[in-house]
Image (cartoon, rainbow, N blue to C red):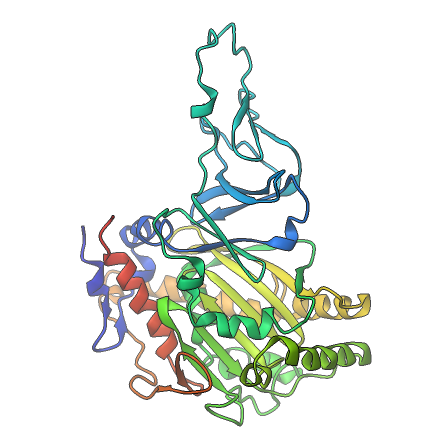
Length: 422
């Protein structure tokens, strides 16, 4: 196997452009990363009832996520065992059976093959249906209603995989006594660029904001001085490198004006958080927070809304972004409307921040693809050697701007790409 480890220089803190533009690298990722890491597939509130299902992807594999009659959430590869056609071609719904449109084989919510046309006349009753169910993803686990799945039956538990990063996820997901729910609908759009460029930016790139997003600052959606680094380094304004390639950005900037109902509701949530978070976490509630769970799940809580998203890999130079809005379960309708409108304006297919990001990700892979440029590495040394371990929060900490978390993503990428199959 090719030495993919050589593409990430641990000493110099560099990453080869081949990581983003080389087809051999991309193909190896599908095996080395997407079949061994925990991948986000759904929010549990999207599947409240038995037989509820949705379709999504794990890497390049189309999958069905379904809540069975027994209440358990299972994940199956969305491909018929007869001739391979997609058995479910709708985004979501509620149904006891998935019927392949090609030859009519049907499967229940446990993935078992139930119906086969002409079973007696064509198969002479000799087909063993128990051996031809949908291919099931062997591991499904849930953290704070985030449903993750893993193709690796021997993988560590989701809790161990998330590790200390759970502390930071709880700042958003566990701040309300009644929890969060997923708002209806999915934002989906195509973006130029490699999926890792998006994942790394949401994990630890606060450096680009005052340059790339200057137009947003000019209309008041951000600090008026253009400085996203905050005023309390280490304590409230910091970035985090966690284990297993996960990373987090936290910064405390003044929120823009919001309707009185929204301001009152979020003040109540901050007070409630004293019941669900420890004192150190409670200090950080409703700050601007962005993070990535390796490899391709990101969360963004900013300007009053919370967005979760997956960067679906679609080759070296294209990705699909799938995003959902989260809101406290007891939020009143006027707050839900405010949150939805803010997310659409900023981070959505038509969002101004999102448009800025997509343009430069496309530009990066276009510029790095030449036979000469791909031989010159990219610099990820910002802040290296200057992080701190602190008593009051987990992970390696450094104030914005730094790339210690971003390079941590590629350190873990390197580990996964060089691991031997077990």
